[in-house]
Image 1 (cartoon, rainbow, N blue to C red):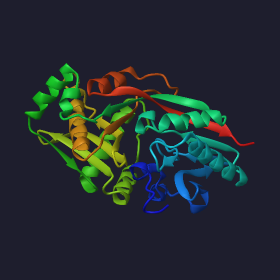
Image 2 (cartoon, rainbow, N blue to C red):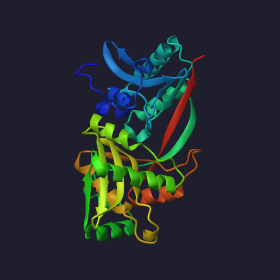
Image 3 (tube, helix red, strand yellow):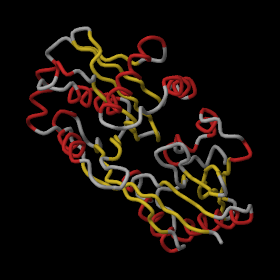
Image 4 (cartoon, one colour):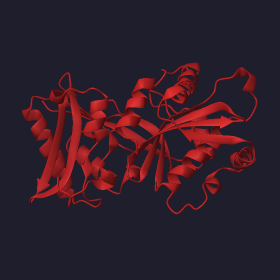
Length: 309
């Protein structure tokens, strides 16, 4: 890859070699196929091989091809996939699993889906995904539903602060808020504290670890990745699990406003709020309604699989 052939959005965070470093992936398990046409880079497919299966999106929400051109030709996209599959098969790989990014990430995503279907991929799983489109937005609060907007306006008038943390006690507090909330809702604790610290160190300009306090007390936290140069993803966010607070307004509306406002300020056109469905793909209606109330619209996130036998 040359300086005159940058990948769209600077390339996906989860396909960066430093991301694999943070996850401790041995060099021998990494694969990165670069497809060229007439000496011109078309795109790359990055992933990890485990137990004979190539996974693009290993230890990540998603992966998939990174392209140079947002409007590639059909020939270029088919060439990227056929070339990558041939190289993987020659390497003894028997199965391919691509955790695709949401179709709204670029204008090329529908063509990538088409190419995979043409080459025999099937959809192994589909999540309901939700995102906030910030393109053209001048006021984040205008995207919120009326009731949520009224709460946020009131919360903004009260004492609060949101800080970006990179270690120490604040990171421990942030991690505990997220882990406790996930466990309380029957989910795994999430990313370990030390992992978050390593990610912040590896990507200081692309990882935001945010801790929200109201009246001096920590009440909510968020982990936000700049996955492309103009796309943010909320990897985790949660509020404090406190029975005493039940029935009162959750700080999550305020946290959502602050996250989205910072994303807009720093140049994001899109904020991916992640899946609102369970492991079997069924909708989590509570998540759906909350994200809708802060301006999110629905989409999908698919997992494509193909055999190479």
